[in-house]
Image 1 (cartoon, rainbow, N blue to C red):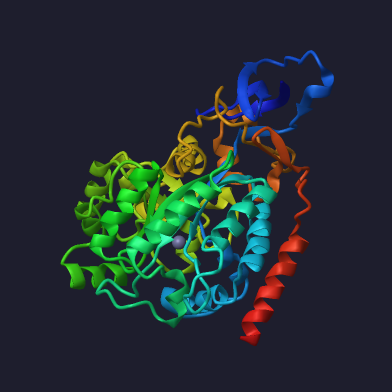
Image 2: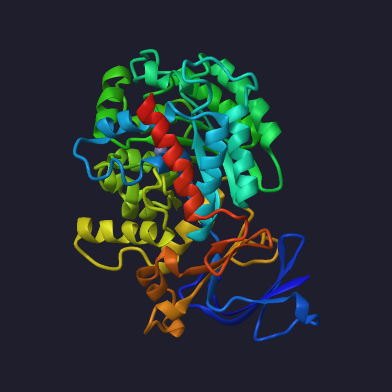
Length: 452
Ligand SMILES: [Zn+2]
């Protein structure tokens, strides 16, 4: 048994708990004691000199979008013009570059305090749409990247077959995303699911959006999720244009279409859920589905502000995602949920800080199929982070978690433990990954894009 000692810890409430000892055995939390206890063997006692919280979760990520950071964000245009730039990056990836990029992106997430990522993955095949010799080459590249970086991963294998809700075939930039038919997607996804599953990697499935799959495809995707007992994610109503196109093609909103196809249910996560009507919100709540908000990306792309307050009131569990990874900071996502709603509703204190922390931790784990985790509770995998409060001058831990949620940044995260192993020590990855290695692989990918 290894013992981790911390002066303060968050275990779910609005207050922090003082002097906590966390015993870890075989990668799981064996016991949590209050009080400054010492283990019998001093060699097995580790100090975390700060505030310990469960590891943060980015429930919606596209790792390769990270290569766009700093290159598209200052420009004009909209979601759709940004998407063309994103497709040019997607066009350069092969299993080797994707493996190296994803490993460094996951390492950056770990430095920021994320211990679990939901990778919404749709770059399945060669740029011309033909399969790699190893049909799961890209998927294995990502799963192995998570293993080497030391992050917990749910690989959401995404079905992407169409260019719009009317059923147009994928364009040249989208060919490598498509398996051709939903049956081919299902066969590949099921094979990949059993190949990637490990202690730290779980399979999940996704329908890209109502733009990219037809209603009958949705039924098949839901059946595969049931079969694998895996979470199901889908982009929903990120843009008003998606609602308009869906209404025109199917006479119903994206939420209505998903509901009709039996996709909305417990275990399903509606990603973005930005432009939902009152009726849509009730439909999502009644279905038992969750919603994943990605506010730093949604604001970057000019998507709009989603109804976090209204969905929360209706009992919908909200998780958070870094999506395009232009910002990789759990505190930024938490604060953006609250600040967006302050601006929208013209009042303060919309979401209690402990609820924001739950969105960034437990709700994300539940959305990614790791729902057995509870905040620093026995039996849960030993995933936790230490936030160095010495930078937060004036912060008083006895005031509760509000000061932490509203003042800290990713740069206050000093140590990160995943499955009982210290993956980040004093702000440095113990796996050899660094900001410099991430920079190197991004330069390589951008140079290739410019040559193409
Ligand atoms: Zn996305």
